[in-house]
Image (tube, rainbow, N blue to C red; front, top):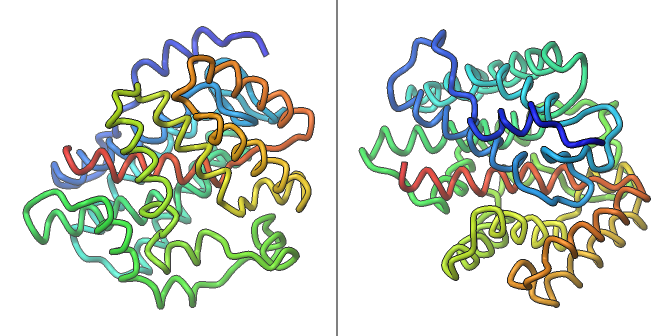
Length: 295
């Protein structure tokens, strides 16, 4: 796909939260931060198999402009779910907000699923970050936000699943856990994998883009990504993990030519139609919980 100059220009200025939600300044601040985290994930490039401002990865039905339309549609959701966290609302309220947000996303994108996973995970983390900050009058640690999602463990595990969804079919077919189990366990992949990788790269002076790309590959190397399973089966997942592990073993984004290496890996992903969308969702979540410590 040719470089989308309009989309790239828009990516330089992330959308703010809409002003239609009656919520506290804290809810608006954290809602904007959640959207900015999704924006940062989209802007990061190169990302093997995933949509960036410059290409559509392995996707033929979406590009950066599709993601931007979705982000604009979701601005109010993240503010509303932050306010629900501040209000210590029951899980049913969070779920209702998520269902409405998914409908808004699909309307904005013409039925294309750009952010379903993020609506779930980033929504829960935004609610918990807001809840903890309101309760303790200070920004919570990223790990505390992740583990705090266990507050809703029973409700998460009891919530009905759609057996027709791609994710649920992959869970059943390959006997792997999904994001619901991650949430119920307090997102161990975030505080044990993504956050350490992100912080280590940032501490060395890496740019945001390099730190995010490195963290993404750490996740691809370790996550049983349901999107990869759906698109490539067990062989596709194993291939993606092996490529990510090799990239990391060679130094990851500490290498001078890391962009060229990721572009080459991306070519292999596109040839196989692989897209690590679950890992991308976790990347945005990691960036959010990291940034909210100082917001």
